[in-house]
Image 1: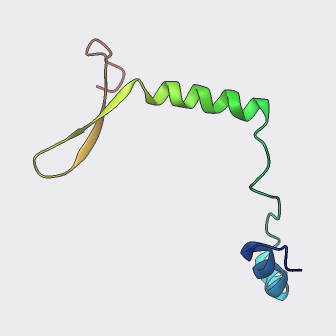
Image 2: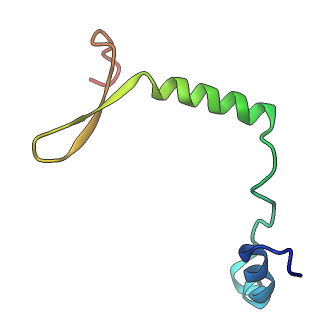
Length: 74
């Protein structure tokens, strides 16, 4: 029992509440990424590199394409 992390201890302790709120996902967050997830991560990172965040003088921010010819968001 000492090998359990906080989430596992919490879920074991609050087992009766799951009757009302439904089951929780008890999978480990420390497992290796699958190939599909790795590919998806690479694609999302590449998509994120296409944009930059611009900050206005009032402190608000917005996202614009790095390529000025790209009119997809305008």
